[in-house]
Length: 303
Image (cartoon, rainbow, N blue to C red; front, side, top):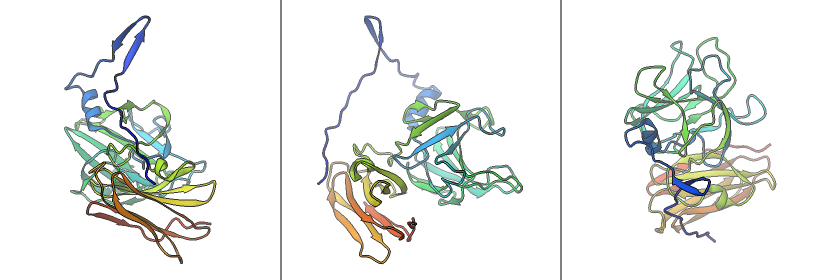
């Protein structure tokens, strides 16, 4: 049974000053603050994941660059998905070789002089010239760099405005709030760049965390979640267009050696949840929204 909720609009923010109140001022329309809010950058990780960013942990850092990690061991996030912080066009997808310490680098142009950099990737999933949507998978966390530079896996992330390096590096803003430099742990709200009122966690239920995701163009994203408490996997496809209007949407989960479980129908917000327990086995997962389809290989094999 799908949940339904009323959307709240017209929320006004006020500051209380003693007995008086004053509206919070909007940024100047042409200011950098206004531009970055309009771009609506989100964290470069799937919706619902929590990561710790650190801008002071590397001597190679310039101003507002951020290194991201999660987990308790150096390799805990190796291979975790990295997604686009905002929609745009890929202008660099290459290994930088001996040029610098970026290793596998993806750079996305968001228009208006804004760009984002995703460095040290283990795998690059996009090509130069490709249009990407917000929340679309662009690679995985890695530790690639220049020869002889041995680093632990992490995502190096930058936001730039203009071309005068390094003064063009800007403070990162996620979901309209400036990152809490130098160190802050945040939960991603990069849910496909849509105004879908539901999250993958709400669809799957309490105790589920996102462990992987894949973009479905501008139509939405499909998510794989896991519950440490009961050992169940969950797949849900979240729509990002035609919200509230029933359209064909599908989510599926297949445990290796077992029949595929599928939820397919005309839904307003999401397909699923589809659950399966897969102790010691690999799973294949995917979904469809609009004309876009994602089918994973058998992966995320249990121990």
